[in-house]
Amino acid sequence: MKNISFLLLISILFAACSSNKKQPVIDSVLTHSSIDAQTAEIIKRFGPFVQGVWVASGYIDTLSRTRSPIQSDKELGGVAAFAISLPDSKSDSIHVGYSLGNHEGANFVLYFKTGQRPNSLKTNLTDWDGKGGFFELGYVVTHNDTALVIYHYNKTAIKLDSTKYTKVADKPADENDAAWGIQYITNKKLITGEYLMSDSTGSTRKATFNDHGKVTGFPGFENYYVNTDFSVEPGTNPDELIFDLYSRHQKLYAFKFNADTLNLFETKDKDDSVLIGKLKYKLVRQK
Image (cartoon, rainbow, N blue to C red; front, side, top):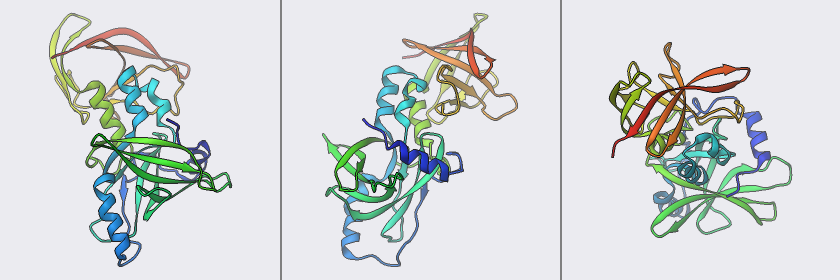
């Protein structure tokens, strides 16, 4: 899988100032008071396929294999995740909020106009190198499994590359977080489950983590957050699990998997890096 053009990244990064925590996932706008029959038919045909929360398939596949967000980060370049919900009122286009490189929030316009393929729609995503490249959003169905694809074309409509996306949810739990889908699928693939936890003193207790970043049974904490944004951190940093992020008592641990055991390590800062310290907790997943 190839990611969306680097030049697209540079241009939109320059234009987008908000973080992915503040960019709305869905921002549908009415562009015309009424639509023609052809547009209505396109909305009816594409709606069941495109609605939902979508994350780059390469990230999900790599995450499942490596069990490491930092090793999977390269798969989140360009359009990393987005969500689509068709508006109740009839319109011939919608604004789709998306996570750009899993760091910035941005949006693109999805037009209900058939593109180069019968199963693709036009967008306003363009190459900003002045060469006239453009992007379209389509769907593919394989063995009753639907995926979305962003196709990248040059100015003569020759396909250059494409990026595939997997549906992770019907709708986001947080419509103000364009990266919600990335966090949700990361939690679900890596952390969610029931564990028997032992600390460095030998004490044991049960702890439960859910898909939405909630934890019970872990002393003193209610929430957890898996770091998936490494755009401003050195690539040598470890995978990080943060409890009660942004609170006065937040706590960061480095984590590594060993079969069914999730190991949490103390960390220490050195220059601009986070170093792994002593093993603090062992969490053995319960079958």
